[in-house]
Image (cartoon, rainbow, N blue to C red; front, side):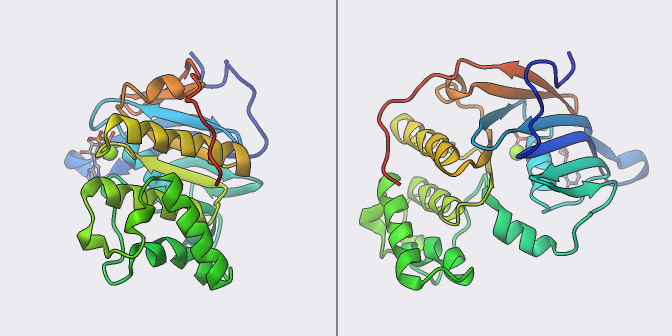
Length: 249
Ligand SMILES: Nc1ncnc2c1ncn2[C@@H]1O[C@H](COP(=O)(O)OP(=O)(O)OP(=O)(O)O)[C@@H](O)[C@H]1O
Ligand SMILES: [Mg+2]
């Protein structure tokens, strides 16, 4: 099935066409992506599902300009960012201003407390310190970790660190959020509240969100998802199940 048969391609959001990524050279080369087609509309949360080693993290890292693809094309909003080579000069600015990352393993800045870890990016982007901290605390409460707002990262549990790193990815309201197994270290109630927050942020700020997950509780919340197998993506319609209460972020 073609990747684009089920829904129309948006003119905004994320569009990926024929993306390939080869790691290494010669006999030991690994073709992690062999021609990925994918799109995510603004305001949409799409699941990315596939077995270990199928290329999920590779795809997010290419889109997030953490690694360079081998060939293909990627568009964010109105900008072609990659077309058989990077098409924008400042990749650091792209990562900083337009992409929120939630990594498989959360990394927080060890010498800043929880609030400042979350507030740092908007502060650097010129949002007044007080407003940045207010946004940080709002998100920390939504993620049920506000009681640890003045703790240092090393004093947090793994799940708490993960929720802080999710708050950090959301706080600058980037147009794209890429989340790699964001709920892996969380219990099921907190996993659901994380996914609910991602859906609400997407809706409210018209963010395009990709969530890599194996989590059976989360998969039914996607209206649309991509299965990745053998380096290629296959689009599928999901249940799009609602997850209860709304949130004030
Ligand atoms: N830096 C690298 N150098 C060489 N091969 C790599 C590198 N990173 C990933 N690979 C290989 O590329 C393939 C895809 O890896 P990737 O990390 O994208 O998989 P994944 O779907 O995220 O898996 P998981 O569910 O285990 O996180 C794997 O075969 C992996 O071994
Ligand atoms: Mg991975």
